[in-house]
Image: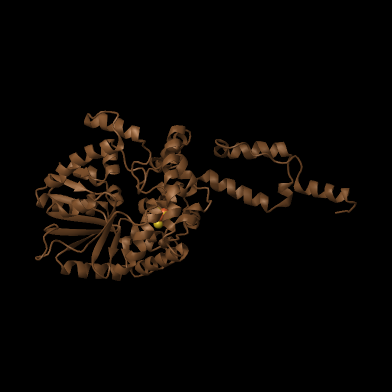
Length: 463
Ligand code: SF4
């Protein structure tokens, strides 16, 4: 068993028994569940909208190389700079090098899972650059020294009392502040940082091929400030975020907001197409877009798993997953948690270390049911399981146990050998791990053949 798998089992065992954790999660997901159906009512036919979005993503992903080049061509025409990063190390090197050129001491950043993926804040700290999270949920998590708990709502596992206590400990505020007062405290601190920062870093929800721009969706306006206040704006984005045309946003924006938070449309939706132009008054002097691969082309190479690149990170599958609701986001030990995280992490970070995530699923299919772009998540989880077995990532004991089971199942005389209690002893002895969280397997005292004969005898028939 890999170390990551052992840590996952240990953390999830603790969280699954933590009733206070479950109460907070169910409370927050309950609020989400109450509003999503209302948001869906804005679509005349929500299934058709999801189907169309899936088709648009299919077009983008099937022609990703051309779409990325088209984006680069148009974006650079307006003075933007595009950087291609194959992995975390290249992305970090590029960001550090830009920051050093600008003599940057502070960056302000908006919420971005890709920056979590490359551990940007840690890299900044090592290079003596202050990195400030400006999304309120991310700011709370940064104060607490924790990674985001959820891809849309980073501090979902904290109550308002937890946040008030955290602010009191870290910022010396009154421990009984209301959510509004806490927001004002964060806002006052952050406003100064926007003015100080030499560089702003954001992610992007979509890369738009035809107009050579990125689209950023947010509820707080902080991403706009990160993009427009500092003299330099760096966007870091996974290459799969591509959509073919700007017109597709009329479909993706409402889908993202409804499936993400239940809103009809998110409060701020911004399209950024380059640095400030000669006739413009706002915006950065320089703008870079870093297109990050970091394992995504592994997924692109896999004809079955390719569908997972359609994900728009709405978070709906996390909120619907019975496993996520019990073990929470941190137990996964990966940037992307929940069903979509369990699908893509083995391909982004290695099958051997992360295959266990695909096995930690009830395969109930609820994730597929709720997915904004109709990704067949539960089938992809099954496919990951099959791939991990084909690639030989199973233990010797497991392989032997299945071999024995198959041989016995195909051989009636072997099945008839021994009494029920003998079989109980052998099988329960072999499958020790199975018994840790379940009752023992209990064989019938009589074999199937014996019962069949008895049944026929009772009916006066002879075998
Ligand atoms: S897989 Fe689907 S439901 Fe899950 S985050 Fe992505 S788009 Fe949303």
